[in-house]
Length: 113
Length: 117
Image 1 (cartoon, rainbow over the protein chains, first blue to last red):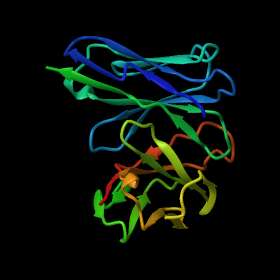
Image 2: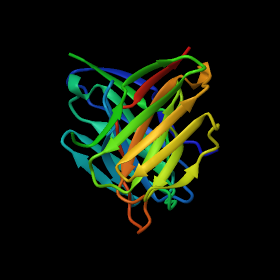
Image 3: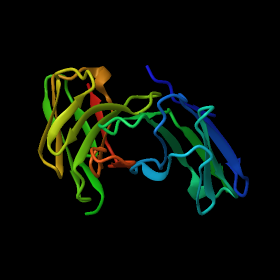
Image 4: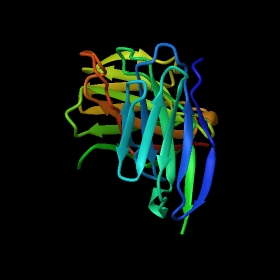
């Protein structure tokens, strides 16, 4: 069984707050780390794919960092807005030919106006 | 329609019913996936199809039967399900399931919420 852990499980912040959450994964056999944003009743939306240790990706107010040696990635949201409310999933990719991903349970973010 | 679509969005069925879930991708991808998400659990891979061939069956009970008639369509046929099979079923597609190397992003549909009575 391959464990991908996300913390916290849920997070409630005020509009304008900055926030961050963590994805932990096995440091061995690392190939890539995927972040998805999943709004209720919608499709999970791909945010980032990260492959290199020390990688940092940014999309608007959302950014992510990667540490493959210690097996963690952080997702940051600067100046949270109510539309950022969603579940944020990470998925560990071992590079199998089948494209198999191992998902965490997600962090559910609620941003209050 | 763009992206990955799934029908129906909600399905309620009895344990003796037979029903099918449909997934269609409009992205020109060659790999398609079925995932299951039960309450409080991570997304769990069920089946993978690459170029219409099933390449993975993740120890899924035979009451779930996938079908991939072409690279744009994927079905999940359901037969004599149990109440514990109630879950959200998500379909995804990707360019080629990483046959040629590189990183293969999966694109998801909105899911079918299945309730088995």
